[in-house]
Image (tube, rainbow, N blue to C red; front, side, top):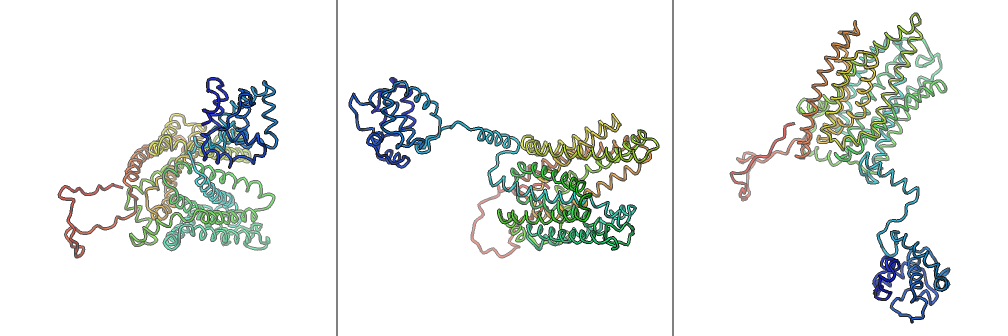
Length: 623
């Protein structure tokens, strides 16, 4: 071996350490491996470096300590490919023997490189990191701490789905900013409440159609159908709005009339897309991710959604004056096109991950049709619990939101007496600051804290966190009934509902069937929030005459709702754990077992029941 040939280790510690790290036993395999990773040698002196069994005389240059050090360094540089034998070889070895001081510095340099990666020898070492590599390593460590360890495929999947959600939310908020101005200009501002009621009926019809399409097409093709329909519809509306001022469809025709149908069509189409498009995305995503993947990825998805909710209105505020309302409307139609392209590219890259689950459910039961979502909601308490956590907090939000607006209106009227224009501008500025603060808080927390909180605390504790925060905020408002207190409470409820409650309630769909994810979820998302807002409006209308009574009695109602949600969150967490541990999916009917008495058919087998009398029936998990 190399140690047998060279001097004892105690005589030259550094050379021995370098030799043991840079050499292998000199059998035929090691020498062949060394030749494969070394440049071609031409000089006899260089070839001598590859033949350590040839002993030199005592007068040879390589027999001295300095000569041995130079030879070892030469072997190391040849193996690593950092030096060419054509440049070194004889001259380098002879120079090291003639100049005793030079090899000493080389030995120290080689000792510092003991941890370097030598690919030719296969030694596991740690090279000195460069500045870009150190920055990349630091970013990777921070990323894993916030979101958990992800493979390249998981990151690519996350980026693709997050971009799809960005186009959905960005397009919706862009069009939502145009919804009220368009109908107010074409039909009249007094018809907005009637348009809101009409939109409920239109969305109800479209949800029935959407549930039917779920039975007819694969899940990824629903994006093509929904996105293509709304992209075409919004393009037609944009072209109609851009007509000359003499046309009844033109946005430049200021003669408002309720008989101009384009205003109603525009309002209802935007409302329906906001309900169906977002529900479709999360249903598809819940069918794609498992539990651990959802905990890692949903926070970043919500952050991208918040970016879209900020980018859409910003584009409207900047581009409407320069390019006009029809152009901005067409930008909303382009967002639908980009959504379709994004999901098409995702399907081409990753395939339809929901196809296997659909095939299994199709063989297990017959389809129940367009009302299956309502049937599943009524049948399973677990689905009702998801509805409660998804929507009932909107009762509190509606009460506090109306209270904040009443207090703000009174404050700015006092600050600007006799000047309603200045009071209105101050009120609008206040609401703009609130929107920026809520979206900013939601974006920052979803980007930096959502995934980490869910993974560290677990889903059970995180479910309890949001209703507990709501209860604390309501108690704070009850004790300090001021505008600043209501503003802070609304900021917490709005911000954390987006970045904390939304990801948790989407994760709750993990132990459910595809029918629950798509059909029952569509009914919950579309009508659950609207029903909760209507229930909150009942409270605000009852105490709208007095802001003090509204804050007092409205706080009592909100406290009761928060306390109920805390219990629901605890119960839902227990049910979630039981379903995950048992491998049960809510909404999947178990396959019928053969009848023990033989009534289900003629038993022609001769098998003997080994279970005996001690066999226990399978445990049933209550959902």
